[in-house]
Length: 154
Image 1: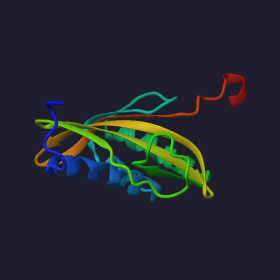
Image 2 (image 1 turned 180 degrees about the horizontal axis):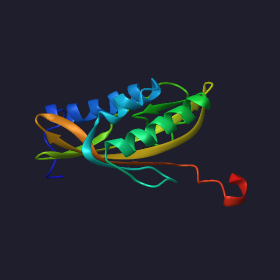
Image 3 (image 1 turned 60 degrees about the vertical axis):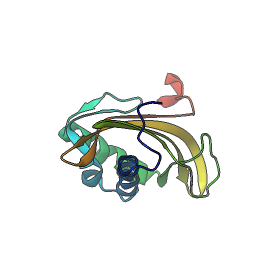
Image 4 (image 1 turned 30 degrees about the vertical axis):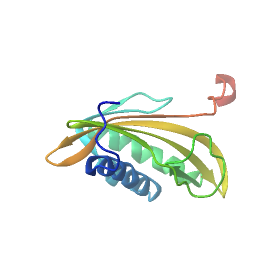
């Protein structure tokens, strides 16, 4: 693509670092640290839930989501190969595209509960560089396993 900076550019590395920090904060149970990675005007588009616009709504979403994840004993592992069902750590590189002060990252993930991979999925994060710092402005993900039919969710 004509948009990408040279492989391994400082911007590409900084974008990847945002999601590395996101994963550490999320798995560490720190909704405030996760939310701090988002721009004030960010929009979060979670699967199976309404969108969250702005930091207050994003913090509300992650406070509940992280608590639910912790209650299940789950951990998210980012930067995996698509469909990786091994409980081993992931070592893949994500795809990053940078154009001026906008960038996006595409990656794959898995969810582990008690040493077993229970699901795999993917994410797309759009970031904007402002005052030398990359921040999430649009963020979405979904899992590879289809959602349960409505009657099974009751």
